[in-house]
Length: 379
Image (cartoon, rainbow, N blue to C red; front, side, top):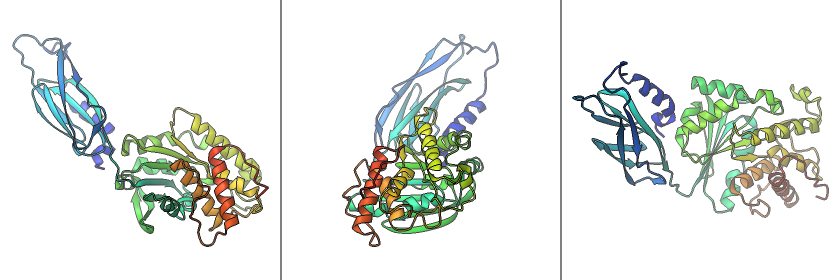
């Protein structure tokens, strides 16, 4: 996706501010323009015609010459003749079309044109996170989709312990601060020193997830200043129909020595409830307009009520590498696919049938009931 597309809102402001203004008393004072024929359900390869109409009449003897431009010509190109422009949709994305008078450039009209992305049958998922997204998506998620016959590309923008505040700073500075882990065809690659803008432009992502650092994930005051900035940035860099997700992470084990566990009185259920409450507030807030919740934390907490007990962590906070990570991957699979993970034929060889069934049902119950623990003591 071209850089112009990623910053078209900023570019639009720059373009409009650079147009030559007519002075007060200009012969074009009171003149305005209106666009018609803005295409809907525009697909790559299609063409459409837009026209411009003038309202008000310049003083006698003053001509009116229309100039057109596309602020994202890699998505929509155009050729124009007078009051008519022919648009050509090149690929999925968004473009702003501007028409103005050559004689008085601040007499303008503009329209946003969305080109519908036609996929290739592959689901593309990008996580913007830290080690908790590493636990959730870098292992087993690819195989769960593969077992369902679904091609998938998975990316993870990784910084250990990264908070929303730091993600926000990286957005504002376009900082090359991430490891970009990517799973394609079942093989994982890793690039260091990658900007978030580079990863967002690397694929036409269908789903992009965001999360908070685990130690402050149950504190709403650490969310509000930063999440809107990151969300708006992702939206500006993505195709119009991208689905944004909130990854709700898990509480620490009861014996965890994590430095931020005291934020929750060193009590697992206090931490879980705080995380679930924050996630609920985020999902219900129209300011954020997040499409999908991935309740990994509830899945893990469900599993802890089973015969496996409080064994889902390897160090008190990161997930145990077999059934622990598999539980999170099952949650992601069901939240994204909309299909029950129960009965999916894939489980890693290190996970026996009992642990597989616990993990799959813990994930399924979490997606169905994301803000409360489901008792699985019969397992």
